[in-house]
Image 1 (cartoon, one colour):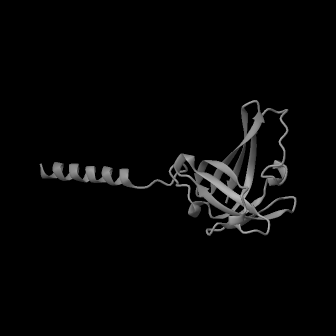
Image 2 (image 1 turned 30 degrees about the horizontal axis):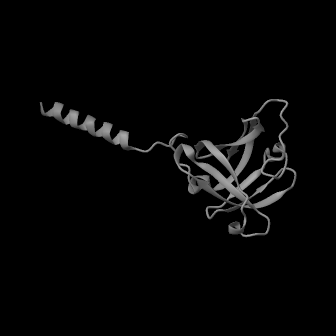
Length: 156
């Protein structure tokens, strides 16, 4: 009887501990400045738009194609830059806005100003995150109340 009680107690303890342990899969990783810090490359861009819809420059910078394979260096203190394949480099100030499934990657382009003096910024909804990849999705107003999306996959 003592063996059964011990076995039962040990089983309950293992179940309790395993249910409390943290998971490292992409759906459980918290979106935070710490988790987004590092050097990233945009490795995929997908358009959820009608084929006849013409996309103007994204982030008021360049055509979306110029962001493919672009490098994004995100420092933990919020400073950083992106470098496009066309040779353009922009200093940015970035952060995470919101929490959980509502988290967004946001940034301001710094053109010689301090971040607090820049009003225009950009946000991407974070739809997936892991230790070496995150996906950011930005809405595009197509007019007539329709919205399309450009999705960027960032890889470390």
